[in-house]
Image (cartoon, rainbow, N blue to C red; front, side, top):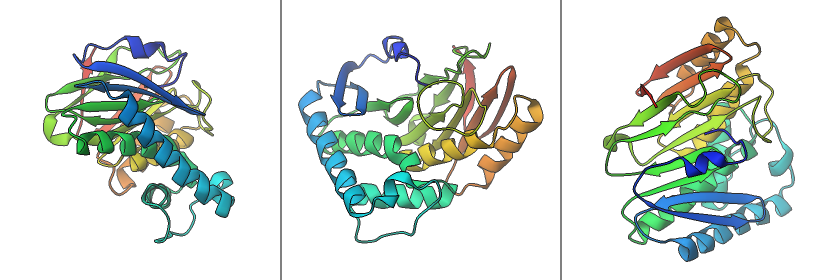
Length: 243
């Protein structure tokens, strides 16, 4: 789930058709029951246009590391980011990858695509009709790539997002190799993953346990997995399985 040359994208056996869609900083890997490149590109353009227009009007939306007030007049993706940031206690851009993944995924579902997984730099929107396992990539940890989160059909659609302080380019103030968060909303999962990743201040069991306890307190979060070095903590409505 974490970013590392995105080579993890080739390691899947979902039985779905893979599509890569890129626009500016957005780089999506989509698995779907049919080719979706054209529809997905249109959806990405729409979401990015809405977010970029809001940033031009309110530049603080781009740079704030703390929640901002809700804005009922904002485009729906922006509203989702503002709400997720408020719940998780982070800046709204912490939810941008998740909200783009979900907006694209839900757009494809509305257009008749039966199953879809949209991955955006380790942040996923997952909508399948069968159980699926998502592997957790955690940098140099010995646990990296050895465990996965098993999702049941009734848990989907959902967001499953990962933050790391040791892997990738995203801003993190923590030392987690992976902080994976499960929630019905990918925007919330993304914002909460940032919050939980930031909370891992040292690579020991106490810090991991504190981060997991914090995940429990975030309204709407349904599960969390935190890995730092050889230490792992998990909570919620999820099943860890070997991969």
